[in-house]
Image (cartoon, rainbow, N blue to C red; front, side, top):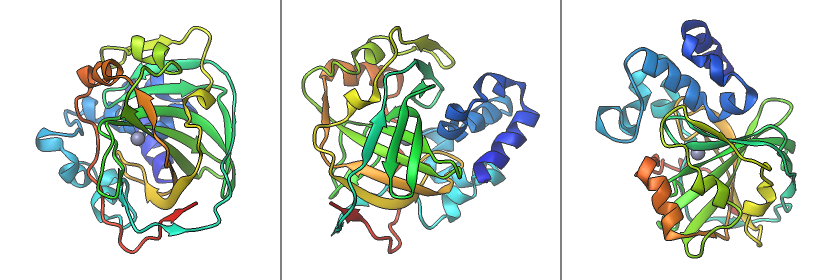
Length: 264
Ligand SMILES: [Zn+2]
């Protein structure tokens, strides 16, 4: 609701948004919507300088949840309780993929990427995007990068599956993405042949589960998080290619405030 409200508001105010009004970007962006609004009005949320994450909550009234929310993401995952979580049913399929540099990250929009069966039912996969270093920490440790796969169910509830990356061998599944990272904000690239999101998942699918928020303004809560325990590899060159565009785009970890973290 918050998201929708913001997007509507922004769409009314800013011509710039015209290019990004599709479901995938509304969700991921929230970020791109607010970015378009901010850019048009002189402000620009980011990760350093005066518009760093500490100040997001004061930048726009629609961003208040960034400072007032009690269930914010990311978090340092520790003290997880063993639980009988159902395995995630990944029903991802090969489909068209558009890679876009949105000014905050590189995002891959998937028109028909399939869905995931999670607690709460089927969630359609809309897009995935990257952060460096990983926003989530595991027992105080962060990873060089993370991918957030953003899903939405029929009721509009959001769910994110996070895939952590370690430095290692070249990631073949993401080679086309990292070879063609759009250099400038607004630049796009259509991946010839599309992409199958299944190929970027780790072999083991055990995961941490908790309730949190978007990690970018407007920091809307009620997001169901699943962080896969097993990381996958990216080469040093792939990590560096992303860091050439975004050397740091991770929100710091947020207080847990008594939330329960489950793991299977
Ligand atoms: Zn993210």
